[in-house]
Image (cartoon, rainbow, N blue to C red; front, side, top):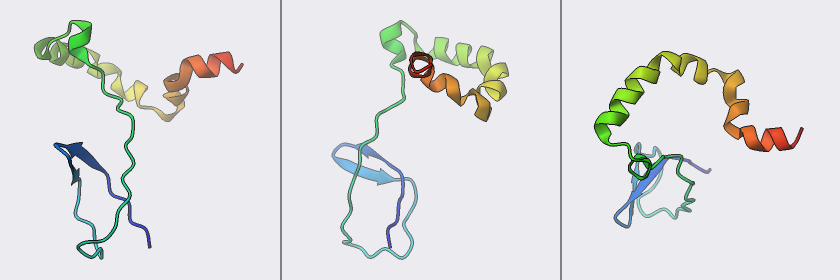
Length: 83
């Protein structure tokens, strides 16, 4: 049986978000690194205080942005080119 658990890679180790059930210590694993969706705000000239203020101002839109029908805009350029 395969078990999937998310985690984060830090300092050469993978930190799991939860403890696996029914998995023996020493079990083999395969780790797949996923691309990060994080935006480097500092490279855009935005510091932590500015990011917090912006997050607060945009919070009113989050319900609309998180609606399933808005997922098409996550790949807007690719969808636009494909017709």
